[in-house]
Length: 230
Length: 185
Image (cartoon, rainbow over all chains, first blue to last red; front, side):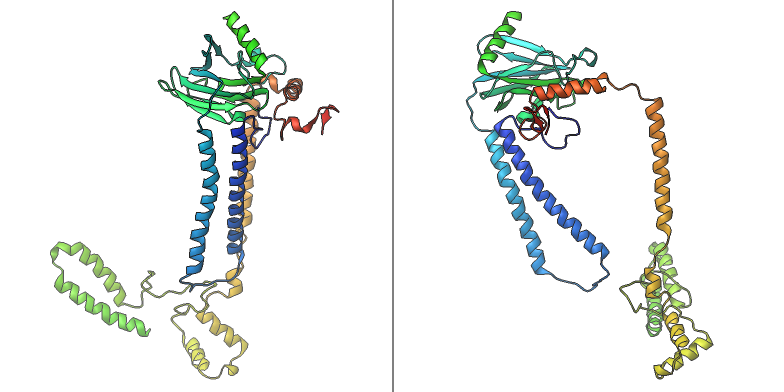
């Protein structure tokens, strides 16, 4: 989850998110270099007393400042496309979960082996236990086994929603009547928070997502318990 | 002045041509065109448009297109005649007077700027202060209480839970906590 006054990304909990972090560092460095250069040029132009009213052609610099930005754009595009295709690779998930968006909660269905389904409502602020996080906690978490490829099929029952968990590097729109596939691998155990990312009505800000990555045995125990309760 | 004489003849010719070749369907256009043309015929009227050479005070044009003082008095004309001779004969006051005939402002005067920025800055601060008062009043009289999770005790409990959960353990939050010594690094 994010901590107060955080500016950067949350630490990556999946390999794809790690790649995205590195790409962001790369692109941001280029952006900062260009912005610094432009800011320097602006201050130099504004603070000089020299004038030249008779400048005409300048072929050499025109060529340079056409070719150089094209090169920079290619240097940004290549890592970007690499990650894009990395995210789309054919993977072999160990588990498939359906995340259905409703107004205003998520429901998760684990139907690979048994029929396990449950709703995940936000814990209201007045019902929070000490230490719980406001607007982020839910009554039931989506538990997944760690270090296993997981496929999430995202859809919606009424209006558009979006299933997003920043630490896992996942965001996928939930479109009614459509199945969108997102995949991730939780590289470390932990609890990862996210929030609905598509405006969906009055309580759009109050339908969070909580993913809990646990070792496989714990996951199996949890799913047995959930099936008993159901 | 030589150029203006030429312009006067030129515009007179145009006037005659227009009166011959335009028919009554373009009478409004003709009449407005005539006004502009007639104005140019009399060089005593100051028409400020870009078809006429103008004086300007600019740092990058040391010699503007026309002198600042166009209509010289008799005394000024005498000075101009004296200028045609050797410049070592001119006194300092005469040189300054000649400068002020051709230029309105000196370079130092063009560069000096004004004290307007103090007024602007003061106005900005006044408005910011007023806005601050409005915001403070709003905070006291309009906003309700903050949620209980923002109390110091609750924040401490949440922070402890974040440390226990190992939130952002790589570079972020929990990375800064020393788990052996149980204190921030």
